Length: 91
Image (tube, rainbow, N blue to C red; front, side, top):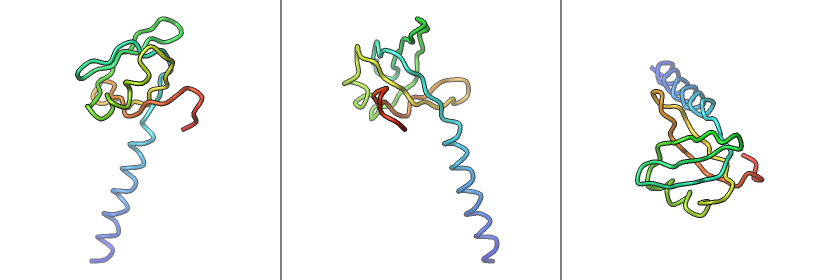
């Protein structure tokens, strides 16, 4: 019985670590924060629109019109922002 629970716990830990590894980042200028999206323009004028939740909207607000690095995750073909930080800050 203990081996079964240990295997299940190990599977959850590995799955959680795999989700973090899928995270990516995009650096650019935060152009717009909408109700459920943010728009970031990269240095090559590439515009990226990402889904965002209300908690991350508040986190993104101070960066409007400024350079920002957006940590995001690809969920079913759509980018979902999971964090915002100054380009100088390390992860």
